[in-house]
Image (tube, one colour):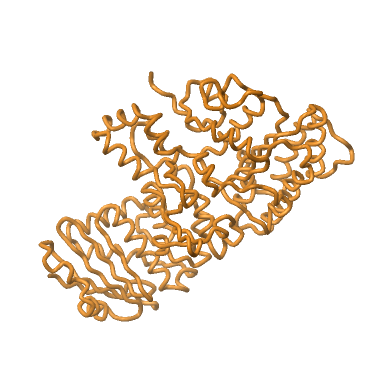
Length: 517
């Protein structure tokens, strides 16, 4: 029987009753519930955070029938029902000072109709505090608090400092209530994409255990390779048949496209669950996760912080910086990591530093394609057309057409980018290099502002040197002096040596010279 794939379904009950496939995470859910009280979990969007919250809700409601056949069904013996305060901040649009108040007020009114209210509870935080206390006293059992996407209001107003401060102060007081109500709380979990750390939202709630980088719960959201091969064996075979691939080739492509997430230094590989489920549902490979969200604000952060995109290939960060994003305007790396565009690739134990990089091809190619029109001028306004034309010029050896297209990318350079032209041209070249790399063999090196690029196709090799406010002659001479072409001396492919000069005055390519071998 063909599986139903729970794409966009975040209700544990609906998945269990609707014959949808479910990756059994309930042993980890049980461990979470039994080994602690206050938790925070950060994971990228569409990674299963809402389903985790829904699973915990069903568990603390004592819904034993929903867990039959799952690990939890064997582990839990008592199935006690608790009062649950479930706050989902995901659905609302937050763009005015009243938006957050209206959302919280609506939730509080619903709870107050069930547990009562007092005239003296005039603020949001006092009302929340009263609800927690009365819910525990009314039922004789402590309360379970589940907050989904706690950071959604703040993420929607990045760039609006006044509204950000207003939301932060409101949420800080609201969430802080949980610490003062400790004796009435059985369990609490807050989830979100990012962590606004000690300085802000969580300063009044410092008893949270952050399990975002905890080995015990690294696979709580997402799909491991073991789970993929166990629960989707037939799906993998069918996907391969539909795409003319062997089972081995299909597994390799799934890994290249959707695997590669690591949330601790020792974490096993985690696959993107949203992309996997969509791939099996549609029986074709696609950029499903990336296409559901446009990271416009991330690009603005990259530009604002004068980020050198070349760092994507060798980024490093310590644990403290990865766990908070309060410095995102000067350092966008933590929010890139927490949002899922970068992930842990390695760990330096001596310096307690993490090596970061793109998790997989879906993210790397999608993000790079998205960056092109944000940094470069496109004559057609169509990224896909520009990239295709670029690659075709390279493949057929039309060097002048390739360089003219590259030249057009630098026309109409925005003033804010032109103020640091060297960084701007390095960033555009990095994007071009990365995009070429998906269709050709490409190598890119930079040192103290000097850049050389090597691009290889089945017929041609291009060795390029770029200068800023020098001359095309100097760039070509450097290729000779540094013997950049020497490694390809015995290669039968046609070799082009290309010297390119950028001019700060014209804010673009001033001249290029081509030498054929």
